[in-house]
Image 1 (cartoon, rainbow, N blue to C red):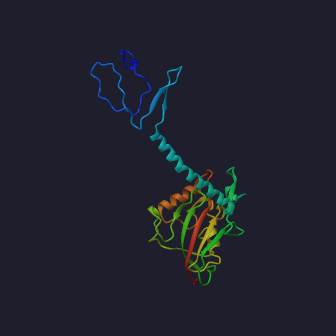
Image 2: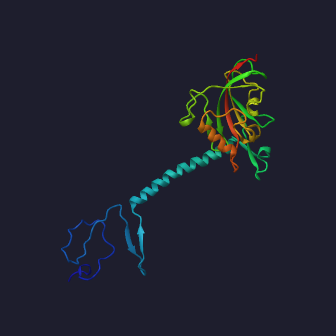
Image 3: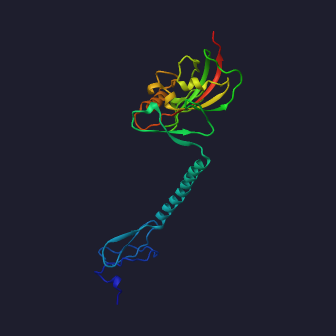
Length: 263
């Protein structure tokens, strides 16, 4: 007596042994059920009792990929959380709500960042000497020759001027001319005038500039320094003229090359 699986007209059973060897194909017109092995990466289908809906079961191969992705994400998330906790514990920056006249009329306030390792002046300028120079400091009426970096620190930290070194792309500054201005002449933004106080030739000073002592009327063409490349001008102009919720705080690194005495 033949088994039910081999009787003509009956469907093949759904659950099949996955490790049986592959058999030759049956002759044309035969209704004999054939058992085949399934590859490791395939999916298995089964029917639940009482209904005909099929459910897919993810194979071990695909499951391994998912598990590896999870293992890669766990260290990245842990590292991010750890970095945030470290910044908060060390007090790298202190945020406080400050009213800034340059931003009045836009119906929103401003969060000012205060850094503990910077010196803050009455105007709101924050500065730190990265390198102390030698010699006398510039006086009013003298011309200073400087080199400078500029960053939109309040908006993704984008660079808009490179200080005498290659930054890549359109921001290369290896062959640019140094910037000159006369101290006290009003040729540059107030932050640059103030930053010269106490600097000496060869020194490098980093300053954080709030909008009040930056470019007047958010126009980079009224006072210097102005970026020397088109890409830099476009990056700075985008931040200055944007009327949305963009932090217009800027960061500059200023290197005092030399002082030209007044004549």
